Image (cartoon, rainbow, N blue to C red; front, side):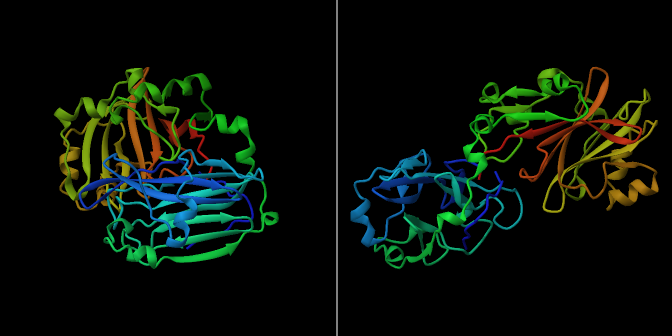
Amino acid sequence: MFRLLPVPLFISVGLALGTAQAQADEIAYHIGLQCQGSQAAIRFGTDDDGGPIEWNRLPPEREKQWAATPIKLEGKCTLRDGTKLVVRSAEEQAFAYGMGGADPPGFFSLWIDGKKIVSREDFKPGYASDEPYYNTVFYAPGSLQRCLYPTSEDERYSGPDLSNVKALKCETTPVDMAKFEQDPLEMNGKWRAAIGTISVSGSGDPAFCRRFIFPSEKYKDVSAETYINVGPNWTPSKEVLAYLPLHPDLPLERDRASMTAYSPEGFDFDAAAFDFNNDGKTDTVVRLSAETHYFDGDIFLVKDNAVQPKAAAALAQEKSYEKWARQNAWAIVPSAEDRYMHRALFRLDGTTFVLEHPTNVENEPSATLFRPGASGLEPVCVFQMIEENF
């Protein structure tokens, strides 16, 4: 259920959470912090459709003590003896498939005087888990007390008698601060200032690579289809990746009308004829795309130095694209096993590029720009989002 970490763990962040669908309301989850004397309370709450935050009712014996103490949404406070507390929360990645995929868990991390005491501990169950929700976490010098609801049912719909609050299960665990190390990411002001920006590495010219990076503020009110918001959703992005502002040629989109797209066996197929591998000769490229549990990404089937406009129609009749590719001497790029990577294909300044980013946003690097060549996809630029600390 929970864990204490005596050494720093470099994972990624947020502080107000995303939304989940429940009982026809759009529910957002929040976390707050109360500090009083030498004690603190980590509070959990929700709002319906952007309304006022409804904080979980405290255990009856604690309500009077905390009633007059304000709840700080910024997640920082200093106790009477100078002890500094920081708490952050976020949600795991949501998926369009799988049991409970659209309702991910919510988690939080806690630092005391720069030491990570709790790391990514779930306070809201998700992915169809039957674990109970957290009510409150209390801190006192030398201990943490976690109070959980008795069942996995959403505490907000328990009825007027508050029976679930009266039945809270509270467990106290000791916290020996001497066993915890300083979290270097919390103490590094320069690193923290870079959170939400995108770093660049790889063999390509850094100036060329940075052409694909734009301020996120510019895209605040623009369709998400025009950019790639790389990295976990709990990192407040200052920068995004984009290629459409560079006015590339998009052959697969441009030629859809003549080459026709199909959707057999859960895949979307589209095709075009152009120079895929940058050898000056025309190839035929079929893109396979899907968002399913088995395949969530894009790959390409490539027929070198040949124009076959009916390839997508022929492939649509087959049950296995891998078998069809082998039998008809088509290359699978990058490979049939690489099923969880999304890829955008475009031509820029006369050269074909593939920009890929992982389906699982926690995987690294955040994105890679490739130049197709004789030996396959050759990496040019590697992009990494500087993630919030969890």
